[in-house]
Length: 379
Image (tube, rainbow, N blue to C red; front, side):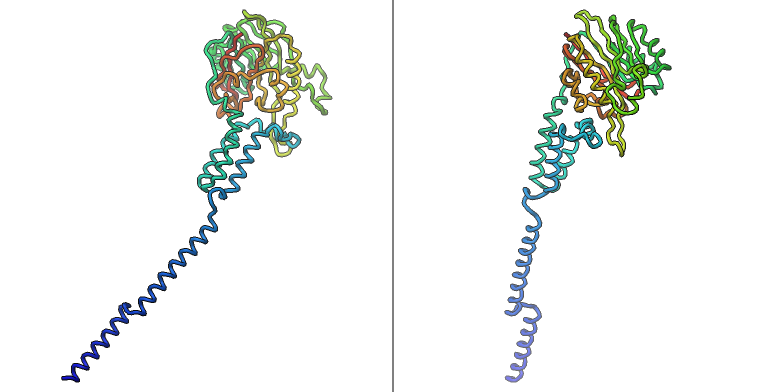
């Protein structure tokens, strides 16, 4: 009996040892589990340290975005310092200067995605500069009333419906209407379509003025080639330059006294890889027009024209130093006028001196690639 019990006890003991080894509940197994736990903890700590090394704090993230934001702000702030020596780059930037504000939300989206506090802070510069330059155009500064309504429009030499354009312009109610890019073929159509509403008119070359009030002292202003250098200008006589005038000056008799009205279509600009932003003819015309306005004895002056440039362009400093934009003073928004299908710039201007702008707006399309611009002025 004793032997049997001993054998059974041994078998049971052996079973317990096997069971203990298999289930991992023995002392050796407990030590292994603790080592594994410690190893996992150390591993996680190392990974966190590595990740932390590659993930800087918010002020150190996005250095490229922060640099781009600062460059954008400096470009808008110092746009007048961008040289024109290489392809008239400065004038090109100034023509589309308001649109540089679109880069702000793009950079902001990138800064938020990168969680970069430095980039967000850097964006304050372009935001403040843009608002300083164009914030005043965001609101409606127009006032009701006005003693005189003027409209300027480049009707386009390729306008497929000059008769319809004449009807639309007559319906605008303008007291003085300036038309540019008139062709010999379309001139009669405009004269016929506007005769009933405008008893007084004068056409000089490719520009004309129609008025409900008497006109006098109408003459041409040489802005086509004056001031230009080079073979093209040297080979043309004064008679040849005056053959197709692109600007005129007239006096409108108002109840408040004479008003000098200038109508001008400055030279076109071109953008090409070799010459860059080609503005030679336009800039020469702007200088000539500025001299004519400076010599004007009448204190009240209105200039209506397609200047082929915005008032932010340094090329018009000679004009903007004497005249102010009705859109800046009394408009609602930017008043973009070109191209008619999707306007991106206001190159059709109404500039004044000695009168008070009350309102400024853009009229619907007439078949031209320009939109008509209008303004109400008072004394």
